[in-house]
Length: 537
Image (cartoon, rainbow, N blue to C red; front, side, top):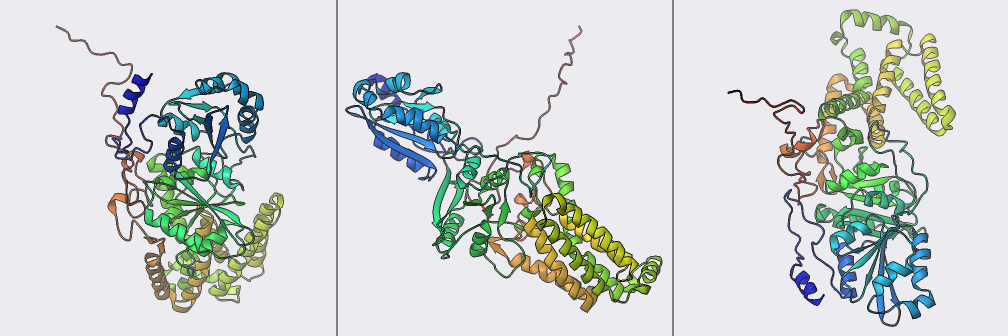
């Protein structure tokens, strides 16, 4: 055995180079040492001292020392306490059963009352088992470890997100328990370089706030900035991610969101793999990711589950709907107030006939209808779910029809406001949709005052403002400004998955290659099942 151990020690390699795809080899490819303290230290360092990795050291028998590891949220705590720790600390087992020479064998065969127990010998197996919810037992003077099947954890109902519905993809959303939320990410990225840092924010509430990132992919400057902004928060309470968002965002006086909010684990996973940082807050199912880009708010999770041509068409439709939701009422106001010559004659006659009995100008019409619709929308959100949608739909129909018959607004204005509202619902992100609703009123005022000239100038000012925004130092309009062709394939268009070989350069800035060469489809030259042609002589 000693000769075999010498051979194994010679084969150890602690370097973490790069694999063939250009990505860092995150898990060390070597075997355990026989010093328990060194093994424990290596696990802690490799996992970045993540706060959800639980470590329990114990003295068993007369001379034996062991360390028990498991991931909080992925492992069943009661199963571990009752069937592992409870058995090991029994006095009879400690004094009579455990001996120094065959300690792990005795623990495996006689003391652990769980069926799934196996021996592991290298770090690859250890980290994969640990991050899959299994419990690891390491012992002093032993070159092997035990992996015990204790997968379990929080079992509260995980339902589909109510604000981000998709046709394809996961049906699981975050809940209000921070450990369950981090475990949902752990279950998708079984990699020791997925690091987690937890801190308490709020002088009164002491709310658990955690940041998660992939070491080696995420930008160290962004991580440092996120950590710095969180630590300088001095407030009594943190009750939701909205508190964190308002306290750490780059720009306060803007309607555009500079942090992305989601309650879908698959979206957070994808953002982490791009080099972003996720911020979890205990007590809320919504998670923040930073840095955030403008184009990100028009992308949905199932864009990546459909073919690229379908996803591209849907994204272009969302961008068109966003533009309509901002400027449609303003164009109508400017055209009917200042630029009637731009309207086709027949349509102008129809609009004039409809507005003949209306006592208000177009701007007042639009404001009345928009305010009424916003009231109905807010009422539909606050009312019980069973009647909220009914009140919104019926209220809009009844009030719109009554307003037309009473001569308060014209039918054309009802159509414009309805199209605008429907287009606003097409934006996947609620924070971006509500931003468009605020900008719409500002554009209406400018269009009613200066016509198309003022509207065009307002749009130019909005684009300048967007280009000036930053999210943790990253330009908000990246990859359009500055224009980066290598990252433009996943914006308002989406190229095939196999062609998206690089992570966003201004976000990750290291390890930007995420796929190797020759990933595109290579169909066989011969159809499957077709018989080969035989040479005829």
